[in-house]
Image (tube, rainbow, N blue to C red; front, top):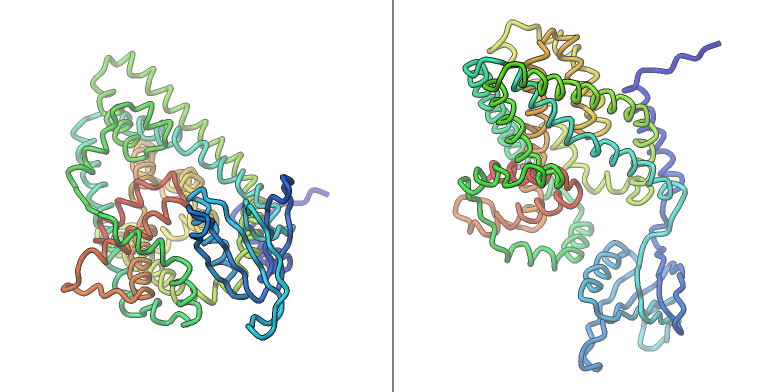
Length: 465
């Protein structure tokens, strides 16, 4: 008897659920860390649990000048973060952990580790399988650049008439700018109304302030400027092959659109060869993502299990109001902005539209990957909504690269959220250095988590200001 598997988006939702349960069951001990250190020229690892106090001593020059940091039993994230900061200086670090009551009258039990190399969380079955999720994300990133390049060139060239290209391109970019602006306004408005940063538990807020105090001062003290002219200049690559190798998406988009547009002026026979090549390459990349997405349930399961195991469900409690604010904003933008656009600019049924793009929403929400969602989006628009292939090949890859309304919305919320946590006033009379400092803090955090979209993150933040 042949067993019929559920649809891919259903498999991903099931993987999310079971991954969260698996991670909660095999969660990381909240009071344990693994210390890698060198004793008598031998490197070893020791598990430290249930300490009453931990000291990190950074050896200075001269030897009598040392920096000492102290951590309580509930400050494990701060301990790991602080060690990484100290380690960047290249100095030798000694760790002392104490058991029992820390009191002058009662001497606690102490253990000293010299030449500490790393401090990390314990590994569990849930965190060990994270490599499966990392492979899945790498596979998606693998096809992102060639897919965008081929689809945009084929789409731009297939429009044929330059006047048609200019008309569709102008409307597309105007629409993208408008929806992004709406997304930012919704995010900023909800963040100021709900005030998620003010609702955070005081203990958690103080712990965050202590943990990231050094990074905060560094970011606020940095000079953050936005130059629109320079941004336009930077969009034009000096070397398109360098832009392709480094994943500079805005530069890739410019080159692809320019190449496709000029291709319409070339000799018909020669341009037909190039157009057929990029059209075939686009189809192959879409098929490749179809193959990769078969691995999606396993990858999603591993990623969510590792995240829940490491941070626990406490992170949901900590960021509950932030998550509610973002989700409410996404709901308003999806149902409100897009429905209004359909009513104003088309005669297409709103209900039929949302039914037609349901697979796109589920895959996008489950994977948070534009590369994974793009081929599903192109297929749904062409088959479910009846949009021509020439339009989908041009508009959708462009939108997946530069029109990330969800990113703009949640970064707007995040900016106000961070400002509220740090007690910064964002009113019109406030010194703009604090405001830009918040943007810089979140921008760099976003860049480290998703390096392939760092240009887009900077763009959204600039618009938000």
